[in-house]
Amino acid sequence: METIQNKVSQSGLLTFNLEDYYDTNARIVFDLKECLFMGLIIKEKEFREFIKTNDWELFRNANVAIICSADAIVPTWAFMLIASKLSGIANHFAFGDLTNLENSLFQNALSKIDIDAFRNQKVVIKGCGNLPITTNAYVEISRLLLPVVSSIMYGEPCSTVPVFKRKL
Image 1 (cartoon, one colour):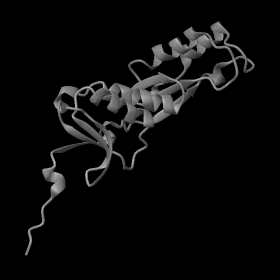
Image 2 (spheres, helix red, strand yellow; image 1 turned 180 degrees about the horizontal axis):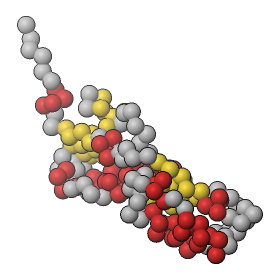
Image 3 (spheres, rainbow, N blue to C red; image 1 turned 180 degrees about the vertical axis):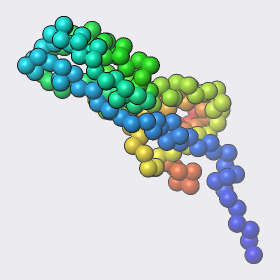
Image 4 (cartoon, helix red, strand yellow; image 1 turned 60 degrees about the vertical axis):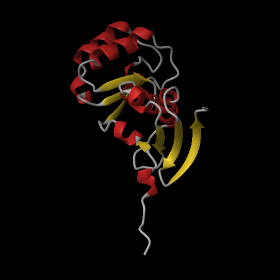
């Protein structure tokens, strides 16, 4: 009887799972539209009063996407004031929609990886999972790994799509 060998475990492949870097805190959209006078403009005095009196604790430990969904010209300082109130309360915040927020969360998480630990390794970037991983996250981890790895594959170790192989 022939012994069954696990060729995947013998291959020397490292699996990189982006789900390990997924931030599980709540996502909240802060829409500046609600602060506009007549849906058109920011009135500084009233806006500053809103900033002072709003219950910012609603955003405690959340990831916040800051947008203005109205077709209005909003001064940059208005977004900055919101950021100043979210700082120290929200887990993370970013300008833009929820996709921008996800991209920012992954950018932040992936920037903390010790990329040198992958030097000259064959890496499989896991492709299937249960969490919503943005395409941007796959591109970002590729950008970070490409200078150091010997190869990158996408998918599962038992069924991969070759993406990159360093020429000797």
